[in-house]
Image 1 (cartoon, helix red, strand yellow):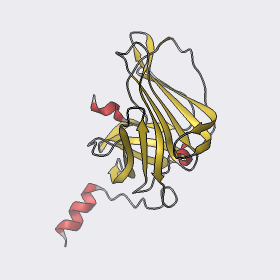
Image 2 (tube, one colour):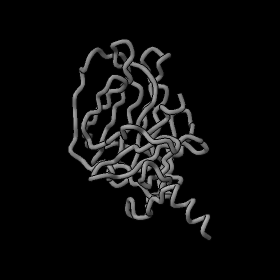
Image 3 (cartoon, one colour):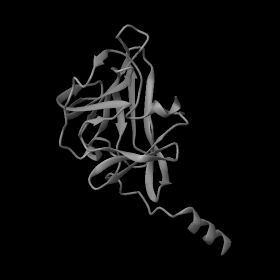
Length: 210
């Protein structure tokens, strides 16, 4: 499914039963994924495969202007991310609204489909640098009463993603790849270039009267 591409929704392996993991962190997640058009993060895995994470533009979703975030260069799929009351929010996928939106406030997300766990990690070492103040996000997909680990991502405060572990559901519980940050561009303060969201009806009116 293309909708599982997100910062926040990938596939892979290790079985867990019930809700064995519970954790949370009290953070403003926007500090760990700076959103500004043009921001980018380049990661390289052990097979020398390059992954380019980018904020590629903005888009209007459910009356809110959002950032379009994609997890590799050329990927046609993206998440619509915004900030609401101190929390990072996935308002939509590929321009279509999520109902309800998914809120990232550092607390566990646990529903019939997915279990996402957050933990604080002291540091992560990458080719780009050693980064402190890390939030670790572990994603489990629920299948037939089991929780299957699919992805583990690490975000550094003020930087963004620095490490990405993808698990393979067909590989006997092993990593498919581990990608580490090699370079990044984080320009400007988060959200400063997010304009006003103009409803479609208003756009139509303006076009008809100009």
